[in-house]
Image 1 (cartoon, rainbow, N blue to C red):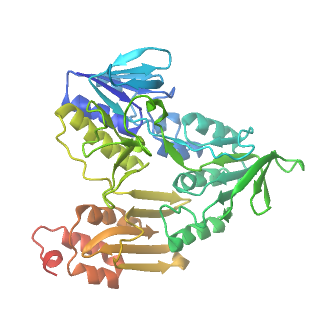
Image 2: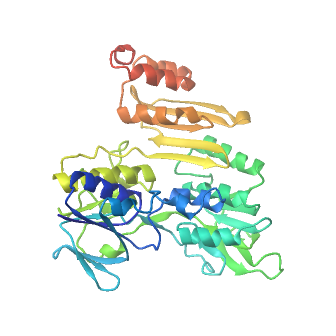
Image 3: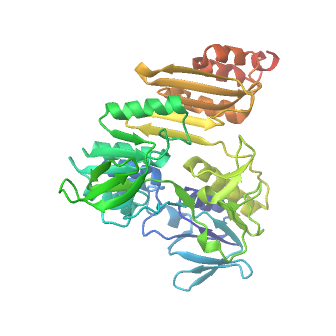
Length: 424
């Protein structure tokens, strides 16, 4: 059996390793277009701050790991998939045949159509190459503008701040991490950043990048309200988009990402998709969406590989939308339907002086969503109760009274012989 995996990120590597466990004699080829060993983008902030070197970003720490599993790593770019011939076409014209194909090409950063965005000194922080360029440009006193305060922006915010840069953040939405936090929680993150000396501009759009004429810095970042921010460096973190352009003539069904079924199988029975590129089932909403987060990528890679090797035995039950964010030491997380369910109950506790916040969202007797800041011990518990779909019974009113008792609720409700969560 010939397995080909396009994409050498967490989804692709997890799938390759799983396929090797499932099929000892298979030929497994992983194609990644970056000239690096497979690595984690989530490690780039630690690389920027010098906490790790480039090797510290690698998904698997031993260089011989893939060779020991007889996984062939090929550094090239796939420009087309030809399902009728069961081959993928590489940039140089070479073709590689497959029996089963996994597309795990991930996503790429969005480049907003802002005048001047191609000026020198404006870049993303998405690849190791980007990381090297940023590390060389950062330094004490450098005037840095971060375009975007979403999840990706806030991940790299700490690294930019630690460099000693004079940092300004521009976000077009009215709150930070708007797809992860409500107003109360996002307000805490904003105040935390302000207290650390970071300038935050919310509800602001960048209209243009221009050369600076007053020698304060190399660039002027023009905002839509007329203000201008001097910058030596601009880091763009304005969202991501699934890498599906190379599938334009393949016949594979796509929308925001590649459409997949409950087996992570595409519209072609021999082709599967996983990770940021797959538009898969959302556990909380029942809708098919793209979840560009690493835990979902790993789950997808594992399940897709099992089905590729075993004939669609493993059903995807949906991925729980989860985000855990460290913003300069302030830990924030959100899980599931953190924005709430129609007609559902909720409870929140807000302690701005201590940077503490918790919000629980219920649908009947079930916990369906949660948000927490500064409460790191709750991270696994919140996800566990949401994903397990355990009826809380008597524990729901207790949590509505005191949501910080979530650990007690979890321990009692996950005991198989305990009646509290079933009888009420």
